[in-house]
Image (cartoon, rainbow, N blue to C red; front, side, top):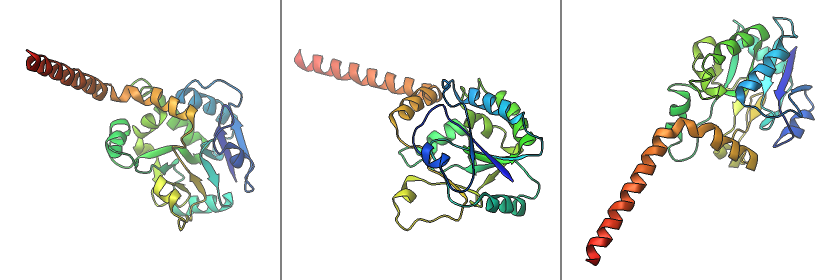
Length: 234
């Protein structure tokens, strides 16, 4: 049996649909509290997981972007079939479909396959061990948990073949013929005002060099144009 958890401080996006899904109960952690960042979420989930037996099989799903489309018994069967060593299993990140998307992902999460931390599962003791390791990268990753988890990819597996999890990109969402055999779908990057503002705050620190370069370039162009106009007027 898989116990399903999510972390949500409030109702937003697909939260209602997730909680009312017909396949399983979703345990909500953090509702009504203040959002204090990704690592606060990790600490709250860690405290919740401490209450469970070490070998309990748990699944974490994003509270705002997730749709469960099959019975969780299928997820458990596939987990045992395709991942017999009972690892912690993360979903595979989608390609960011914006200009310089792959560059942005490499800058934040590094090279190679990227784990999306909105969907993961495994024995709770192994998940807690990975949580402890990720916290060591809190400062280096500028408080971003996905960055931190991807620093320790050797400690978990990624569901690249969508046996259990699939992240649906924007092109797939627009495709009327799209279908998935996964058990749980995530639609990351739902553009709500709160999440846009939060994303700007959370990811700007990763690109301070690029921002500084652009500011210097804009100032340089400004002064060159200004000087050019002044010389033409004289």
